Amino acid sequence: MVRRFLSRVFWKLSRWRLATEAAPDRPTVLVGAPHTSNWDFVLMLAIAWRLGVDVRWLGKKSLFTGWRGPIMRALGGIPVDRADPSAVVSDVVAEIRDGGVFGLVVTPDGTRGAHTHWKSGFYRIARETGMPVTLGYVDRTTMTTGLGPTFELSGDVVADMDRIRAFYADKAGVRPEGRVEPRLREEPALV
Image 1 (spheres, rainbow, N blue to C red):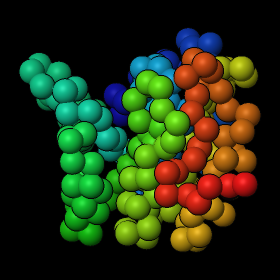
Image 2: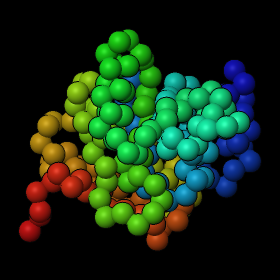
Image 3: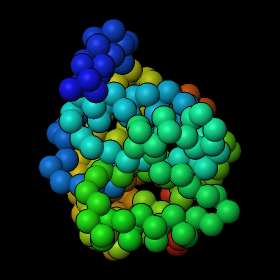
């Protein structure tokens, strides 16, 4: 109730416009992209709280140290040890298989640094759990943010990523210069 109220106030006062196809009707891997600013986090929470979507999100382990730890966990955070990223996928998959029901927000372009590829954890989690993928976005050029389509991954990495690339082709992020093209290292080189 408090979250819904806070999100209503946020959207009323914000310059950003919430434009969304529909809230997913079951647990999903929610892709948050382009991830170019810390404001993405605020927008993601505002979207989830407004739509009543129970989300958990992956964040670097250092966000969970000291006084911030309890706050980040209360906001749905799951700490990620970057030294062992494969353990993150297996831990999240195990939690979901054990009955954890939640939407999982993943920013596959990782931190807001200079990267050339997306991380594949979102794809592996969705495939291993049978969860669909929902494409969330931030686009400063239109000052819109929201949720796009929800769909099942086919297992054909290139075809699935082509669909994802088509959706994000006109999405710039809060800081367009930090945008990373949706491409996984696992994809064969496209000629």
